[in-house]
Image (cartoon, rainbow, N blue to C red; front, top):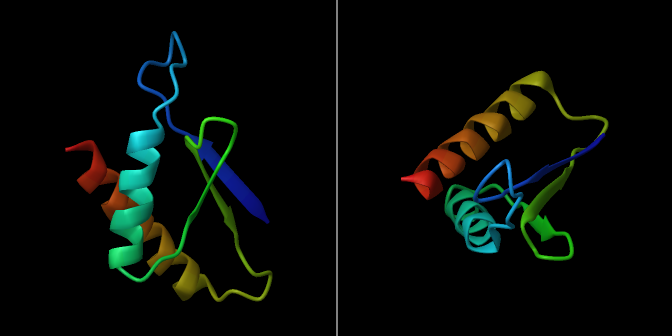
Length: 74
């Protein structure tokens, strides 16, 4: 169950936002969640979730990811 999101400055131009991806990865790591930057421009965040993850663990990880995104976007 791999998931990736591509971070861009503008949806219309799709200008890559590698600095935003770095900020999200760093903010998540500070909260104990390890994410992986990927893509040609290092503006994608890729996650490979274990197939045996519990629902509570997944919810916690998604909450941390959301907090990291919010912090990076401010």
